Length: 421
Length: 173
View 1 (cartoon, rainbow over the protein chains, first blue to last red):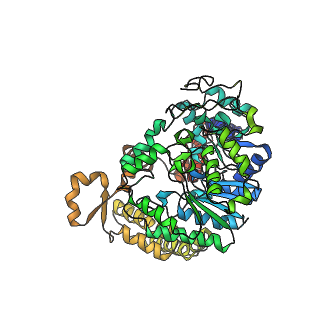
View 2 (view 1 turned 90 degrees about the horizontal axis):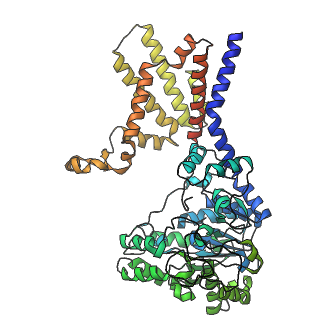
View 3 (view 1 turned 30 degrees about the horizontal axis):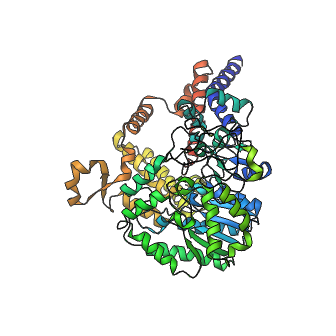
Protein backbone atom coordinates (compact mmCIF):
# COMPACT_ATOMS: atom_id res chain seq x y z
CA UNK A 1 0.00 0.00 0.00
CA UNK A 2 2.80 2.37 0.98
CA UNK A 3 4.45 1.57 -2.31
CA UNK A 4 1.39 2.75 -4.24
CA UNK A 5 0.98 5.83 -2.05
CA UNK A 6 4.59 6.79 -2.72
CA UNK A 7 4.05 6.17 -6.43
CA UNK A 8 1.07 8.55 -6.53
CA UNK A 9 2.96 11.24 -4.59
CA UNK A 10 6.07 11.01 -6.79
CA UNK A 11 3.92 10.96 -9.93
CA UNK A 12 1.91 14.01 -8.78
CA UNK A 13 4.99 15.96 -7.70
CA UNK A 14 6.89 15.20 -10.91
CA UNK A 15 3.88 16.04 -13.07
CA UNK A 16 3.28 19.39 -11.33
CA UNK A 17 7.01 20.18 -11.50
CA UNK A 18 7.00 19.61 -15.27
CA UNK A 19 3.77 21.50 -15.73
CA UNK A 20 4.68 24.45 -13.51
CA UNK A 21 6.26 26.70 -16.21
CA UNK A 22 3.26 26.15 -18.46
CA UNK A 23 0.89 26.82 -15.57
CA UNK A 24 2.65 30.11 -14.90
CA UNK A 25 2.40 31.02 -18.56
CA UNK A 26 -1.28 30.15 -18.48
CA UNK A 27 -1.81 32.48 -15.52
CA UNK A 28 0.20 35.15 -17.35
CA UNK A 29 -1.86 35.01 -20.55
CA UNK A 30 -5.10 34.77 -18.59
CA UNK A 31 -4.31 37.82 -16.49
CA UNK A 32 -3.25 39.68 -19.62
CA UNK A 33 -6.69 38.97 -21.18
CA UNK A 34 -5.02 36.91 -23.89
CA UNK A 35 -7.20 33.88 -23.23
CA UNK A 36 -10.52 35.62 -22.74
CA UNK A 37 -13.58 35.21 -24.99
CA UNK A 38 -14.15 38.20 -27.25
CA UNK A 39 -17.65 38.42 -25.81
CA UNK A 40 -16.18 39.20 -22.38
CA UNK A 41 -13.55 41.50 -23.88
CA UNK A 42 -16.21 43.58 -25.66
CA UNK A 43 -18.33 43.74 -22.52
CA UNK A 44 -15.44 44.82 -20.31
CA UNK A 45 -14.03 47.19 -22.90
CA UNK A 46 -17.26 49.09 -23.38
CA UNK A 47 -17.74 49.25 -19.60
CA UNK A 48 -14.23 50.49 -18.78
CA UNK A 49 -13.22 52.41 -21.93
CA UNK A 50 -10.17 50.21 -22.41
CA UNK A 51 -7.70 49.59 -25.19
CA UNK A 52 -7.65 45.96 -26.33
CA UNK A 53 -4.32 45.11 -27.91
CA UNK A 54 -4.05 41.38 -28.24
CA UNK A 55 -0.98 39.65 -29.64
CA UNK A 56 -2.18 36.07 -29.33
CA UNK A 57 -5.78 36.29 -30.58
CA UNK A 58 -5.69 38.02 -33.94
CA UNK A 59 -9.26 37.50 -35.02
CA UNK A 60 -10.73 40.93 -35.74
CA UNK A 61 -13.70 39.29 -37.41
CA UNK A 62 -15.06 37.59 -34.28
CA UNK A 63 -14.04 40.45 -32.00
CA UNK A 64 -15.85 43.05 -34.12
CA UNK A 65 -18.96 40.89 -34.28
CA UNK A 66 -18.97 40.86 -30.46
CA UNK A 67 -18.62 44.66 -30.35
CA UNK A 68 -21.56 44.94 -32.75
CA UNK A 69 -23.68 42.65 -30.62
CA UNK A 70 -22.97 44.76 -27.57
CA UNK A 71 -23.26 48.29 -29.01
CA UNK A 72 -25.87 47.71 -31.75
CA UNK A 73 -24.74 50.79 -33.67
CA UNK A 74 -26.62 52.85 -36.26
CA UNK A 75 -23.44 53.29 -38.30
CA UNK A 76 -20.54 50.94 -38.94
CA UNK A 77 -17.32 51.29 -40.91
CA UNK A 78 -16.43 48.05 -42.65
CA UNK A 79 -13.28 47.05 -44.46
CA UNK A 80 -9.70 46.10 -43.73
CA UNK A 81 -7.33 47.80 -41.29
CA UNK A 82 -7.58 50.76 -43.71
CA UNK A 83 -10.90 51.86 -42.22
CA UNK A 84 -9.80 51.45 -38.62
CA UNK A 85 -9.24 55.18 -38.15
CA UNK A 86 -12.90 56.24 -38.18
CA UNK A 87 -13.80 57.03 -34.58
CA UNK A 88 -17.13 57.11 -32.76
CA UNK A 89 -16.52 60.68 -31.61
CA UNK A 90 -16.84 61.82 -35.23
CA UNK A 91 -20.43 60.57 -35.36
CA UNK A 92 -23.61 61.79 -33.76
CA UNK A 93 -25.15 58.29 -33.68
CA UNK A 94 -23.87 55.04 -32.14
CA UNK A 95 -20.90 53.83 -34.18
CA UNK A 96 -18.69 50.74 -34.32
CA UNK A 97 -15.60 50.45 -36.43
CA UNK A 98 -15.56 46.96 -37.95
CA UNK A 99 -12.22 47.51 -39.68
CA UNK A 100 -10.32 44.24 -39.93
CA UNK A 101 -13.56 42.28 -40.18
CA UNK A 102 -13.29 42.29 -43.95
CA UNK A 103 -9.86 41.71 -45.42
CA UNK A 104 -11.18 40.28 -48.67
CA UNK A 105 -14.40 40.65 -50.64
CA UNK A 106 -15.65 37.18 -49.76
CA UNK A 107 -14.88 37.77 -46.10
CA UNK A 108 -17.08 40.89 -46.26
CA UNK A 109 -20.05 38.82 -47.29
CA UNK A 110 -19.43 36.40 -44.42
CA UNK A 111 -19.19 39.35 -42.05
CA UNK A 112 -22.46 40.89 -43.23
CA UNK A 113 -24.22 37.53 -42.97
CA UNK A 114 -22.90 37.02 -39.43
CA UNK A 115 -23.76 40.59 -38.40
CA UNK A 116 -27.35 40.28 -39.63
CA UNK A 117 -27.95 37.43 -37.22
CA UNK A 118 -27.67 39.92 -34.38
CA UNK A 119 -28.08 43.44 -35.67
CA UNK A 120 -28.93 45.54 -38.72
CA UNK A 121 -27.24 48.95 -38.81
CA UNK A 122 -28.74 51.88 -40.72
CA UNK A 123 -25.57 52.75 -42.60
CA UNK A 124 -22.35 51.00 -43.65
CA UNK A 125 -19.33 53.03 -44.64
CA UNK A 126 -17.50 50.49 -46.78
CA UNK A 127 -13.80 50.99 -47.50
CA UNK A 128 -12.69 49.29 -50.73
CA UNK A 129 -9.05 48.25 -51.01
CA UNK A 130 -7.93 48.39 -54.62
CA UNK A 131 -6.02 45.12 -54.30
CA UNK A 132 -9.24 43.22 -53.66
CA UNK A 133 -9.97 43.67 -57.36
CA UNK A 134 -6.70 42.14 -58.51
CA UNK A 135 -6.62 38.42 -59.31
CA UNK A 136 -2.92 38.39 -58.45
CA UNK A 137 -3.78 39.22 -54.84
CA UNK A 138 -4.92 35.82 -53.54
CA UNK A 139 -8.19 35.51 -51.70
CA UNK A 140 -8.66 32.64 -49.23
CA UNK A 141 -11.58 30.31 -49.87
CA UNK A 142 -12.22 29.78 -46.15
CA UNK A 143 -11.42 31.52 -42.89
CA UNK A 144 -10.77 28.97 -40.18
CA UNK A 145 -9.48 31.58 -37.73
CA UNK A 146 -13.01 33.03 -37.49
CA UNK A 147 -13.82 30.10 -35.19
CA UNK A 148 -11.34 31.30 -32.57
CA UNK A 149 -13.49 32.93 -29.88
CA UNK A 150 -10.45 34.27 -28.04
CA UNK A 151 -10.42 31.55 -25.41
CA UNK A 152 -8.88 28.75 -27.46
CA UNK A 153 -5.88 27.55 -25.50
CA UNK A 154 -3.20 26.42 -27.93
CA UNK A 155 0.33 25.17 -27.49
CA UNK A 156 1.61 28.28 -29.30
CA UNK A 157 -0.28 30.47 -26.87
CA UNK A 158 1.04 28.73 -23.76
CA UNK A 159 4.63 28.83 -24.91
CA UNK A 160 4.40 32.42 -26.24
CA UNK A 161 5.53 34.05 -22.96
CA UNK A 162 8.82 32.09 -23.15
CA UNK A 163 9.35 33.42 -26.64
CA UNK A 164 8.56 36.96 -25.53
CA UNK A 165 11.00 36.71 -22.63
CA UNK A 166 13.65 35.23 -24.88
CA UNK A 167 13.31 38.03 -27.43
CA UNK A 168 13.00 40.73 -24.73
CA UNK A 169 9.49 41.66 -25.79
CA UNK A 170 8.69 41.53 -22.09
CA UNK A 171 11.02 41.65 -19.12
CA UNK A 172 11.05 39.08 -16.33
CA UNK A 173 9.82 41.79 -13.99
CA UNK A 174 6.84 42.52 -16.28
CA UNK A 175 6.13 38.80 -16.58
CA UNK A 176 5.88 38.36 -12.81
CA UNK A 177 4.09 41.68 -12.32
CA UNK A 178 1.31 40.56 -14.64
CA UNK A 179 1.14 37.14 -12.95
CA UNK A 180 0.97 38.61 -9.46
CA UNK A 181 -0.90 41.88 -9.96
CA UNK A 182 -2.40 41.77 -13.44
CA UNK A 183 -3.18 45.21 -14.86
CA UNK A 184 -1.21 47.66 -16.95
CA UNK A 185 2.55 47.83 -17.24
CA UNK A 186 2.71 51.17 -19.00
CA UNK A 187 2.26 54.84 -18.20
CA UNK A 188 1.60 55.88 -21.77
CA UNK A 189 -2.09 56.63 -21.35
CA UNK A 190 -4.64 56.39 -18.58
CA UNK A 191 -6.97 54.24 -20.66
CA UNK A 192 -7.75 50.82 -19.26
CA UNK A 193 -5.86 48.03 -20.99
CA UNK A 194 -6.40 44.46 -22.07
CA UNK A 195 -4.13 42.23 -24.13
CA UNK A 196 -0.35 42.40 -24.03
CA UNK A 197 -0.01 45.22 -26.57
CA UNK A 198 -2.62 47.14 -24.64
CA UNK A 199 -1.01 46.49 -21.27
CA UNK A 200 2.50 47.33 -22.38
CA UNK A 201 2.02 49.96 -25.08
CA UNK A 202 -1.57 51.18 -24.76
CA UNK A 203 -1.84 50.02 -28.35
CA UNK A 204 -4.85 48.26 -29.77
CA UNK A 205 -8.54 48.62 -30.43
CA UNK A 206 -10.49 51.34 -28.68
CA UNK A 207 -13.95 50.52 -27.38
CA UNK A 208 -15.45 51.78 -30.66
CA UNK A 209 -13.32 49.29 -32.64
CA UNK A 210 -10.98 51.95 -34.05
CA UNK A 211 -7.26 51.26 -33.71
CA UNK A 212 -4.93 53.27 -31.52
CA UNK A 213 -1.34 53.00 -32.81
CA UNK A 214 0.20 54.43 -29.61
CA UNK A 215 3.53 52.62 -29.88
CA UNK A 216 4.03 53.89 -33.41
CA UNK A 217 2.68 57.42 -33.04
CA UNK A 218 4.54 58.12 -29.81
CA UNK A 219 7.77 56.62 -31.11
CA UNK A 220 7.82 53.89 -28.47
CA UNK A 221 8.28 51.02 -30.90
CA UNK A 222 11.99 50.41 -31.35
CA UNK A 223 11.80 49.59 -35.01
CA UNK A 224 9.01 51.28 -36.91
CA UNK A 225 8.10 49.16 -39.93
CA UNK A 226 7.73 51.89 -42.54
CA UNK A 227 10.13 54.84 -42.01
CA UNK A 228 10.08 57.19 -45.01
CA UNK A 229 7.52 54.71 -46.43
CA UNK A 230 10.46 52.47 -47.40
CA UNK A 231 8.58 49.25 -46.73
CA UNK A 232 5.56 50.26 -48.82
CA UNK A 233 7.75 51.61 -51.62
CA UNK A 234 9.59 48.27 -51.59
CA UNK A 235 6.29 46.47 -52.03
CA UNK A 236 5.48 48.63 -55.05
CA UNK A 237 8.90 48.14 -56.63
CA UNK A 238 8.73 44.40 -56.02
CA UNK A 239 5.02 44.01 -56.78
CA UNK A 240 4.15 42.05 -53.64
CA UNK A 241 2.32 42.08 -50.30
CA UNK A 242 -0.99 43.61 -51.48
CA UNK A 243 0.78 45.67 -54.13
CA UNK A 244 0.89 42.85 -56.68
CA UNK A 245 0.80 44.11 -60.26
CA UNK A 246 -2.25 43.48 -62.39
CA UNK A 247 -3.19 44.24 -65.97
CA UNK A 248 -6.92 43.85 -65.72
CA UNK A 249 -9.55 44.33 -63.05
CA UNK A 250 -10.80 40.93 -61.92
CA UNK A 251 -14.26 40.15 -63.31
CA UNK A 252 -14.91 37.49 -60.67
CA UNK A 253 -14.01 39.89 -57.86
CA UNK A 254 -16.32 42.54 -59.36
CA UNK A 255 -19.10 39.97 -59.30
CA UNK A 256 -18.32 39.18 -55.67
CA UNK A 257 -18.37 42.88 -54.86
CA UNK A 258 -21.76 43.36 -56.54
CA UNK A 259 -23.08 40.35 -54.70
CA UNK A 260 -21.94 41.91 -51.43
CA UNK A 261 -23.62 45.23 -52.23
CA UNK A 262 -26.83 43.46 -53.22
CA UNK A 263 -26.82 41.63 -49.87
CA UNK A 264 -26.49 44.98 -48.08
CA UNK A 265 -29.28 46.51 -50.18
CA UNK A 266 -31.62 43.56 -49.68
CA UNK A 267 -31.44 44.21 -45.96
CA UNK A 268 -32.35 47.89 -46.35
CA UNK A 269 -28.98 49.11 -45.16
CA UNK A 270 -27.65 52.29 -46.72
CA UNK A 271 -24.09 52.21 -47.95
CA UNK A 272 -21.38 54.77 -48.64
CA UNK A 273 -18.46 53.37 -50.61
CA UNK A 274 -15.01 54.88 -50.60
CA UNK A 275 -11.47 54.03 -51.60
CA UNK A 276 -9.10 54.64 -48.66
CA UNK A 277 -6.05 56.75 -49.42
CA UNK A 278 -2.41 55.80 -49.65
CA UNK A 279 0.23 58.31 -48.61
CA UNK A 280 1.17 60.92 -51.17
CA UNK A 281 4.66 59.46 -51.61
CA UNK A 282 3.18 56.02 -52.19
CA UNK A 283 0.56 57.38 -54.58
CA UNK A 284 3.28 59.03 -56.68
CA UNK A 285 5.35 55.85 -56.74
CA UNK A 286 2.33 53.88 -57.87
CA UNK A 287 1.90 56.36 -60.73
CA UNK A 288 5.50 55.62 -61.77
CA UNK A 289 4.44 51.99 -62.07
CA UNK A 290 1.07 52.95 -63.58
CA UNK A 291 1.41 50.49 -66.46
CA UNK A 292 1.92 47.61 -64.08
CA UNK A 293 -1.03 48.76 -62.00
CA UNK A 294 -3.38 49.15 -64.96
CA UNK A 295 -6.10 47.36 -62.99
CA UNK A 296 -6.16 50.17 -60.43
CA UNK A 297 -7.12 52.73 -63.11
CA UNK A 298 -9.77 50.34 -64.38
CA UNK A 299 -11.05 49.88 -60.84
CA UNK A 300 -11.30 53.64 -60.37
CA UNK A 301 -13.12 54.02 -63.69
CA UNK A 302 -15.46 51.19 -62.75
CA UNK A 303 -16.39 52.91 -59.48
CA UNK A 304 -17.48 56.05 -61.35
CA UNK A 305 -20.19 54.05 -63.10
CA UNK A 306 -21.70 52.59 -59.96
CA UNK A 307 -25.20 53.78 -59.03
CA UNK A 308 -24.20 54.22 -55.38
CA UNK A 309 -22.69 56.94 -53.21
CA UNK A 310 -19.04 56.29 -53.94
CA UNK A 311 -15.90 58.35 -53.36
CA UNK A 312 -12.41 57.71 -54.62
CA UNK A 313 -9.77 58.94 -52.17
CA UNK A 314 -6.90 56.80 -53.42
CA UNK A 315 -5.07 60.08 -53.91
CA UNK A 316 -4.79 61.51 -50.39
CA UNK A 317 -4.69 65.06 -51.77
CA UNK A 318 -8.35 64.70 -52.64
CA UNK A 319 -9.13 64.98 -48.93
CA UNK A 320 -6.49 67.66 -48.36
CA UNK A 321 -4.49 65.32 -46.17
CA UNK A 322 -0.78 64.54 -46.52
CA UNK A 323 2.06 62.18 -45.65
CA UNK A 324 2.44 63.56 -42.13
CA UNK A 325 -1.13 62.56 -41.30
CA UNK A 326 -0.49 58.93 -42.27
CA UNK A 327 0.38 55.99 -40.02
CA UNK A 328 2.31 54.30 -42.81
CA UNK A 329 2.33 54.07 -46.58
CA UNK A 330 -1.19 52.78 -46.95
CA UNK A 331 -2.89 53.66 -43.67
CA UNK A 332 -4.08 57.19 -43.13
CA UNK A 333 -4.26 58.49 -39.57
CA UNK A 334 -7.51 59.44 -37.91
CA UNK A 335 -7.12 63.09 -38.95
CA UNK A 336 -7.11 61.87 -42.56
CA UNK A 337 -10.31 59.95 -41.87
CA UNK A 338 -11.96 63.03 -40.40
CA UNK A 339 -11.02 64.81 -43.60
CA UNK A 340 -12.58 61.96 -45.57
CA UNK A 341 -15.91 62.54 -43.83
CA UNK A 342 -15.56 66.30 -44.29
CA UNK A 343 -14.72 65.97 -47.98
CA UNK A 344 -17.71 63.70 -48.57
CA UNK A 345 -20.01 66.28 -46.97
CA UNK A 346 -18.38 69.16 -48.84
CA UNK A 347 -18.56 67.38 -52.19
CA UNK A 348 -22.06 66.09 -51.59
CA UNK A 349 -24.08 68.05 -49.00
CA UNK A 350 -26.99 65.68 -49.58
CA UNK A 351 -24.93 62.64 -48.58
CA UNK A 352 -26.53 60.00 -46.36
CA UNK A 353 -23.64 60.67 -43.98
CA UNK A 354 -24.96 64.16 -43.20
CA UNK A 355 -27.51 62.68 -40.81
CA UNK A 356 -24.81 61.02 -38.73
CA UNK A 357 -21.96 63.52 -38.63
CA UNK A 358 -21.48 66.89 -36.94
CA UNK A 359 -19.74 68.80 -39.74
CA UNK A 360 -18.75 71.84 -37.63
CA UNK A 361 -17.19 69.78 -34.85
CA UNK A 362 -15.35 67.57 -37.35
CA UNK A 363 -13.92 70.59 -39.10
CA UNK A 364 -12.71 72.08 -35.83
CA UNK A 365 -11.01 68.85 -34.75
CA UNK A 366 -9.43 68.26 -38.14
CA UNK A 367 -8.04 71.77 -38.06
CA UNK A 368 -6.73 71.55 -34.51
CA UNK A 369 -4.98 68.24 -35.17
CA UNK A 370 -3.76 68.91 -38.70
CA UNK A 371 -0.37 67.51 -39.57
CA UNK A 372 -0.81 64.58 -37.17
CA UNK A 373 -2.05 61.04 -37.42
CA UNK A 374 -3.82 61.11 -34.06
CA UNK A 375 -6.76 63.26 -33.05
CA UNK A 376 -6.82 64.15 -29.40
CA UNK A 377 -10.36 65.12 -28.49
CA UNK A 378 -10.98 67.86 -25.93
CA UNK A 379 -12.17 65.44 -23.22
CA UNK A 380 -9.12 63.19 -23.66
CA UNK A 381 -6.25 65.61 -23.36
CA UNK A 382 -5.12 64.55 -19.90
CA UNK A 383 -5.20 60.86 -20.80
CA UNK A 384 -1.90 60.95 -22.70
CA UNK A 385 1.55 61.07 -21.14
CA UNK A 386 3.26 61.07 -24.53
CA UNK A 387 2.87 63.18 -27.65
CA UNK A 388 3.00 62.23 -31.28
CA UNK A 389 6.46 62.36 -32.87
CA UNK A 390 7.80 62.30 -36.41
CA UNK A 391 7.74 58.51 -36.44
CA UNK A 392 7.80 58.42 -40.26
CA UNK A 393 11.09 60.35 -40.13
CA UNK A 394 10.10 62.60 -43.00
CA UNK A 395 10.48 65.91 -41.14
CA UNK A 396 6.88 66.37 -40.03
CA UNK A 397 6.10 69.17 -37.61
CA UNK A 398 4.13 67.38 -34.93
CA UNK A 399 4.11 70.27 -32.45
CA UNK A 400 0.69 70.52 -30.87
CA UNK A 401 -1.67 73.32 -31.60
CA UNK A 402 -3.45 72.50 -28.37
CA UNK A 403 -0.61 73.52 -26.06
CA UNK A 404 -0.42 70.16 -24.33
CA UNK A 405 1.91 70.23 -21.40
CA UNK A 406 3.91 67.76 -19.34
CA UNK A 407 4.12 65.26 -22.14
CA UNK A 408 7.07 63.08 -23.05
CA UNK A 409 8.20 62.65 -26.57
CA UNK A 410 9.14 59.21 -27.79
CA UNK A 411 12.54 58.05 -26.61
CA UNK A 412 14.20 57.93 -30.01
CA UNK A 413 13.00 61.25 -31.33
CA UNK A 414 13.48 64.94 -30.89
CA UNK A 415 11.73 66.34 -27.85
CA UNK A 416 8.12 67.31 -28.09
CA UNK A 417 8.84 70.95 -27.25
CA UNK A 418 11.31 71.20 -30.11
CA UNK A 419 9.27 69.10 -32.47
CA UNK A 420 9.55 71.56 -35.37
CA UNK A 421 12.19 70.37 -37.79
CA UNK B 1 -17.35 -6.46 -36.47
CA UNK B 2 -20.18 -5.17 -34.29
CA UNK B 3 -17.69 -3.59 -31.88
CA UNK B 4 -15.93 -1.69 -34.65
CA UNK B 5 -19.19 -0.75 -36.31
CA UNK B 6 -20.33 0.81 -33.02
CA UNK B 7 -16.91 2.42 -32.70
CA UNK B 8 -17.41 4.06 -36.10
CA UNK B 9 -20.89 5.31 -35.19
CA UNK B 10 -19.56 6.63 -31.89
CA UNK B 11 -16.99 8.80 -33.70
CA UNK B 12 -19.58 10.58 -35.84
CA UNK B 13 -22.93 10.41 -37.54
CA UNK B 14 -21.57 10.28 -41.11
CA UNK B 15 -21.46 7.20 -43.29
CA UNK B 16 -17.71 7.66 -43.72
CA UNK B 17 -17.22 6.89 -40.01
CA UNK B 18 -19.29 3.73 -40.38
CA UNK B 19 -17.13 2.66 -43.32
CA UNK B 20 -14.04 3.34 -41.24
CA UNK B 21 -15.46 1.10 -38.46
CA UNK B 22 -16.44 -1.67 -40.92
CA UNK B 23 -12.96 -1.60 -42.47
CA UNK B 24 -11.34 -2.11 -39.10
CA UNK B 25 -13.86 -4.81 -38.19
CA UNK B 26 -13.04 -6.57 -41.45
CA UNK B 27 -9.30 -6.29 -40.67
CA UNK B 28 -9.83 -7.83 -37.22
CA UNK B 29 -11.75 -10.76 -38.75
CA UNK B 30 -8.92 -11.28 -41.24
CA UNK B 31 -6.37 -11.19 -38.45
CA UNK B 32 -8.27 -13.75 -36.36
CA UNK B 33 -8.75 -16.02 -39.37
CA UNK B 34 -5.08 -15.70 -40.25
CA UNK B 35 -4.10 -16.83 -36.77
CA UNK B 36 -6.70 -19.62 -36.63
CA UNK B 37 -5.39 -21.15 -39.84
CA UNK B 38 -1.80 -20.65 -38.63
CA UNK B 39 -0.84 -18.76 -41.74
CA UNK B 40 2.34 -16.73 -41.77
CA UNK B 41 4.09 -13.99 -43.71
CA UNK B 42 7.35 -12.03 -43.31
CA UNK B 43 7.13 -9.53 -40.46
CA UNK B 44 8.18 -6.57 -42.68
CA UNK B 45 5.41 -7.39 -45.14
CA UNK B 46 2.89 -7.63 -42.30
CA UNK B 47 3.95 -4.19 -41.04
CA UNK B 48 3.75 -2.75 -44.53
CA UNK B 49 0.24 -4.09 -45.07
CA UNK B 50 -1.02 -3.05 -41.63
CA UNK B 51 0.47 0.45 -41.89
CA UNK B 52 -0.97 1.12 -45.31
CA UNK B 53 -4.33 -0.41 -44.46
CA UNK B 54 -4.68 1.87 -41.41
CA UNK B 55 -3.72 4.90 -43.52
CA UNK B 56 -6.25 3.86 -46.15
CA UNK B 57 -8.96 3.60 -43.49
CA UNK B 58 -8.05 7.00 -41.98
CA UNK B 59 -9.01 8.64 -45.26
CA UNK B 60 -12.64 7.63 -44.65
CA UNK B 61 -12.41 8.75 -41.04
CA UNK B 62 -11.22 12.23 -41.98
CA UNK B 63 -13.07 12.89 -45.25
CA UNK B 64 -16.30 14.90 -45.25
CA UNK B 65 -17.81 12.73 -47.99
CA UNK B 66 -17.10 9.64 -50.09
CA UNK B 67 -16.39 11.95 -52.99
CA UNK B 68 -13.62 13.65 -50.98
CA UNK B 69 -12.31 10.28 -49.77
CA UNK B 70 -12.16 9.03 -53.34
CA UNK B 71 -10.22 12.12 -54.42
CA UNK B 72 -7.67 11.61 -51.63
CA UNK B 73 -7.32 7.90 -52.36
CA UNK B 74 -6.78 8.66 -56.04
CA UNK B 75 -4.08 11.14 -55.06
CA UNK B 76 -2.45 8.63 -52.71
CA UNK B 77 -2.40 6.02 -55.48
CA UNK B 78 -0.68 8.44 -57.82
CA UNK B 79 -3.58 8.64 -60.27
CA UNK B 80 -3.38 12.46 -60.20
CA UNK B 81 0.35 12.32 -60.95
CA UNK B 82 3.45 12.41 -58.78
CA UNK B 83 4.90 15.49 -57.13
CA UNK B 84 8.37 16.26 -55.85
CA UNK B 85 9.28 19.21 -53.60
CA UNK B 86 9.76 22.41 -55.54
CA UNK B 87 13.26 22.71 -54.04
CA UNK B 88 14.27 19.77 -56.25
CA UNK B 89 13.22 21.46 -59.46
CA UNK B 90 16.81 22.50 -60.28
CA UNK B 91 18.20 19.00 -60.17
CA UNK B 92 15.21 17.06 -61.35
CA UNK B 93 13.45 19.64 -63.55
CA UNK B 94 13.69 17.50 -66.71
CA UNK B 95 11.48 14.89 -64.99
CA UNK B 96 8.54 17.20 -65.59
CA UNK B 97 8.59 15.89 -69.19
CA UNK B 98 7.63 12.51 -67.73
CA UNK B 99 4.62 13.74 -65.75
CA UNK B 100 6.43 14.57 -62.49
CA UNK B 101 5.18 17.81 -60.88
CA UNK B 102 6.96 20.06 -58.40
CA UNK B 103 4.74 21.15 -55.51
CA UNK B 104 5.79 23.86 -53.03
CA UNK B 105 3.83 22.48 -50.06
CA UNK B 106 5.94 19.35 -49.84
CA UNK B 107 8.96 21.43 -48.81
CA UNK B 108 7.28 21.85 -45.42
CA UNK B 109 7.87 18.19 -44.68
CA UNK B 110 11.42 18.11 -45.91
CA UNK B 111 13.63 19.67 -43.30
CA UNK B 112 16.11 18.28 -40.83
CA UNK B 113 13.83 18.91 -37.84
CA UNK B 114 11.00 16.83 -39.26
CA UNK B 115 13.46 14.14 -40.33
CA UNK B 116 14.89 14.03 -36.80
CA UNK B 117 11.42 13.70 -35.29
CA UNK B 118 10.64 10.85 -37.70
CA UNK B 119 13.85 9.05 -36.74
CA UNK B 120 13.14 9.52 -33.03
CA UNK B 121 9.60 8.22 -33.42
CA UNK B 122 10.90 5.18 -35.30
CA UNK B 123 13.47 4.52 -32.59
CA UNK B 124 10.83 4.79 -29.86
CA UNK B 125 8.50 2.51 -31.82
CA UNK B 126 11.09 -0.20 -32.45
CA UNK B 127 13.24 -0.06 -29.34
CA UNK B 128 10.91 0.84 -26.49
CA UNK B 129 8.02 -0.99 -24.89
CA UNK B 130 4.54 -0.08 -26.01
CA UNK B 131 1.78 0.76 -23.52
CA UNK B 132 0.55 -2.85 -23.30
CA UNK B 133 4.05 -4.08 -22.51
CA UNK B 134 4.43 -1.31 -19.94
CA UNK B 135 1.30 -2.50 -18.15
CA UNK B 136 2.65 -6.05 -18.02
CA UNK B 137 5.91 -4.93 -16.43
CA UNK B 138 4.49 -2.16 -14.28
CA UNK B 139 5.88 -1.66 -10.78
CA UNK B 140 4.80 1.21 -8.52
CA UNK B 141 8.33 2.59 -8.11
CA UNK B 142 9.91 6.04 -8.56
CA UNK B 143 11.17 5.38 -12.08
CA UNK B 144 7.71 4.44 -13.30
CA UNK B 145 6.17 7.41 -11.47
CA UNK B 146 8.52 9.87 -13.20
CA UNK B 147 8.01 8.14 -16.54
CA UNK B 148 4.23 8.30 -16.19
CA UNK B 149 4.46 11.95 -15.15
CA UNK B 150 6.53 12.70 -18.26
CA UNK B 151 4.03 10.80 -20.42
CA UNK B 152 1.16 12.74 -18.84
CA UNK B 153 3.01 16.00 -19.43
CA UNK B 154 3.48 15.16 -23.10
CA UNK B 155 -0.18 14.21 -23.28
CA UNK B 156 -1.06 17.72 -22.07
CA UNK B 157 1.23 19.21 -24.74
CA UNK B 158 -0.31 16.95 -27.39
CA UNK B 159 -3.84 18.02 -26.44
CA UNK B 160 -2.76 21.68 -26.62
CA UNK B 161 -1.16 21.01 -30.00
CA UNK B 162 -4.46 19.66 -31.28
CA UNK B 163 -6.02 23.10 -30.92
CA UNK B 164 -5.73 25.19 -34.04
CA UNK B 165 -3.10 27.86 -33.79
CA UNK B 166 -4.23 31.46 -33.89
CA UNK B 167 -2.79 33.39 -36.79
CA UNK B 168 -0.82 36.57 -36.37
CA UNK B 169 -2.34 38.43 -39.27
CA UNK B 170 -2.28 42.14 -38.79
CA UNK B 171 0.06 43.35 -36.12
CA UNK B 172 3.21 41.96 -34.61
CA UNK B 173 3.94 42.42 -30.94
